[in-house]
Amino acid sequence: MTYKKIDSTRISISQLMQPSNSNFGGKIHGGYILNLMDQIAFACASKHSETYCVTASVDTVDFLNPIEIGELVTMKASINFVGRTSMVVGIRVESENIRTGEIKHCNSSYFTMVAKDDNGNSVEVPGLIINDKTEVKRFLKSIKRTETKKLRKKEFEHADFSHTHYLDDLKKYRVKIELPDN
Image 1 (tube, one colour):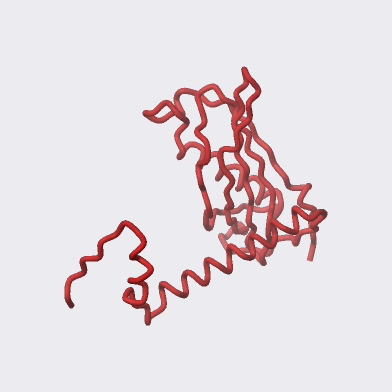
Image 2 (tube, helix red, strand yellow):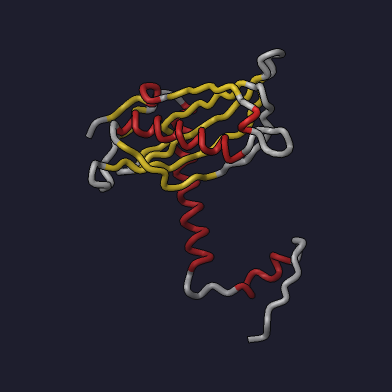
C-alpha cells in the first residue's frame, strides 16, 4: 500500500462573491457555497487518490456567518481520514471583507468521497501519513463521526424500534404527539 502526506493533497481556492450568487436576502446563497464545497472536496479527494471520486455523504454543514456580496471566499480542504476506498475531506470556509480585511469563519464541513475506476467500481486509496497532533485529532474525529452515525442508524432503523420508548424524552421539546390509535 502507498501512503501520502496530508500536506501533499491540501487544496485552497478563493472566489469573489458576485450578486448573481445571492439569495433574496442579499446574502450569498447557501446552495452556491455547497456547490463550491463539493468541487473542492472532489479536487482534494481526486488529488489524494489519483482517480475520479464521487460524493457519498456530507456531514455537518452549519452556516455560522453569512457571506456578503463582494467578499472573497476562501475554502481550504484536506484529507482527514481514509478508509479502504473512501476519504473524508475536511473543508473550512472563510469570507474576507476585502476593504477592511475582516475574516469570518462561515462553516466547516466533512465530505465523504469514494474513489472510482473508469468502470465505476470503487478502488483502494492511498493511506495517510500523519505529521502533527491536529491531523491525529481530525482522523480520530472522523472515526467518531462514523461510529456515531452507525449507532444512530442502528438505534432508529432497527426492526424493534418503538417510538413509545422515547415519549418521555420528547416532553422537553416543542412537540405534540397526536398519533392515530392503531
